[in-house]
Image 1: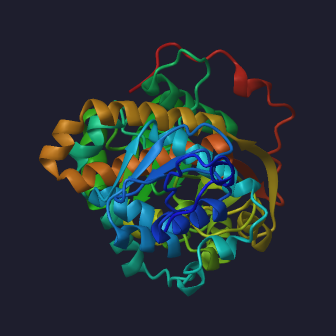
Image 2: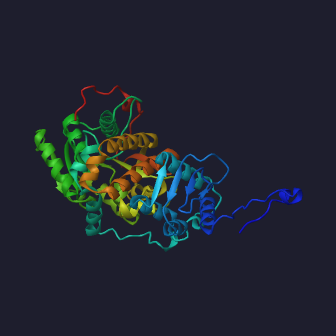
Image 3: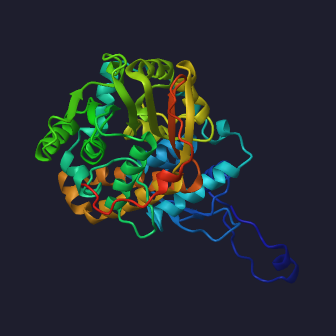
Length: 425
């Protein structure tokens, strides 16, 4: 198909063929419009480059074939992750910046979210959170290899948001500062009993016992993590102070009224929203009259399900609750909210540090797994960093206490006292 320029016809000059965009290019333009016209270019297998034309593209996505484009058109949220992992989409430019651009444009777009991804409504949002399902989900993500995580999590092996007290702080320093920040909020005192739900590789439990002199019961259903944590505690000579138990939050109330503090850092994301009331009641039962608790969790500004690709490939069964949803935990048990803090910029920085360490060990990761695994985790780390940069995700720390508890700090001044320079771990 070609058309002649009117000016050329009028002057009798030679005409030049102007090819109309292919069907693939028109589909691509429609896709970009649906996600808010981001400043990126899609380069198709036809040789065509499609942009919004409004701003200079900050990067390019190279689309391998018609099937990939068709899947991307009907379900961009899922298909981008699948195609990138498989090598059917390649990126020229900074992947994190590209994903930030898409996030911002989607958030600013007036187009209904339902129209951006027609297939979304066909997916089930609710998943039954049985003990066996929870164990399967944890195995999928955490039990793949302790060696893998040790390559990029740092010396603490903490897999949650760090807290950077200064811009020049290292990842390890920031993780220790996060643990101190949590302990100070809980005002832990020597001899107290603490129960931790979802203890990861044991860094916080060991830190609380060693630095604050408390006795810790730490629950986890990841056998790889528990094995690591137990060896670590034994090496530190803390076997009598820290008890690592293979169990989940549903067992925290077995020793009713026995604990001075409850803490959960990075566990709530794995609890189904429908189980929040049950969690609140169990926390209430395990605390004594002077008890208090802290929950640290990824969240968001308003209710929405987790990113479909992340939920399928990285964190099955997970969620990122809004504050209003988290309140089900506290309202059901008549808990008083004492403090809420959002550490969002700290998680963006944490993810950047993780990503840099991951890239520094990328050949070892590729050798241990394969190229698809490398690309999948690269996308996960970049996409998560972008989500915290753009506000798609938040990170909340909520301090609470039973209604009758007299635990109510007068000010926050002690939280920001100079940190002990002789940091453990």
